[in-house]
Amino acid sequence: MPMKLSVISITYNNLEGLKKTLDLFLQHPNSAIELVVVDGGSKDQTAAYLAEQKGIQQWVSEPDKGIYNAMNKGLQMAKGEYVWFLNAGDYVEQWASVEQLLTAIATAPDAIYAETMMVDAQGKHLGIRSQYSTQVLPKQLTWQSLRMGMTVCHQSFVIKRSLALPYNETYRYVADIDWMISCLKTCQTIHLLPGILANFTVDGFSSTHRNNSNKERYKVLQKHYGFLPNLLAHVGIVARKMLSK
Image 1 (tube, helix red, strand yellow):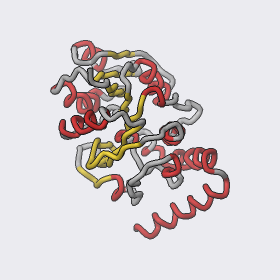
Image 2: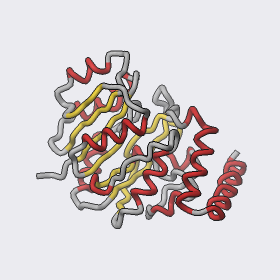
Image 3: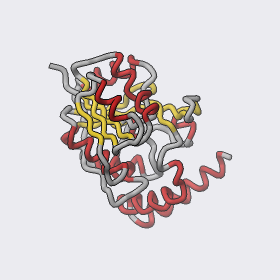
Image 4: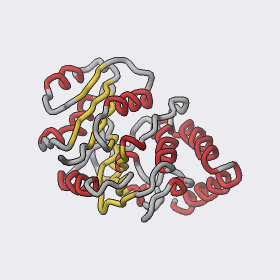
């Protein structure tokens, strides 16, 4: 029996984005993959759509306390041995990428990561993460790799459910960074998947609250890496952005 992967999608009033996320999986039903959807009680037709899709194993449509509360719901609902967050609007272009991921999962690493394609709301490619943010994807990912920020998008990060900690809901904007660093501290074997795994739509929640996100990220990184190392890292971040213009 192949190891089961839970694909968790969080959505709110974004039916078209959710369809974009799920369509590839619904077109390729696979007994190794569980689809889990957490809808925050959308006012559109999301609940009706979910009820129609027999390929979605678990879903709920009810009010929540925000994005990270919803993501924690998804973690609690998931039954797969691995979890993969692909929220509404984020998607995989080629089924071959999913097959490659399942092959890597069969070797039972603690976590798997890959490159991400950044896209706009219309799906236009803006460049891979390493080009778009000037942060090169590390060849060997550890919790120390994120001291300069999110070098790996959570859309292209898959981890054993037994090692996936709850999101810290006291963070409103960048709990995903805190979550990934905390999770990586629990991992021993981390596998780099060649190529692009997922597409990330850049007009997401943290992207549209940039100033608040930056302030919160500073606090998160200081918690994990210490005051002086974090200060020096952010000097480097600012310098890098200035040089890239």
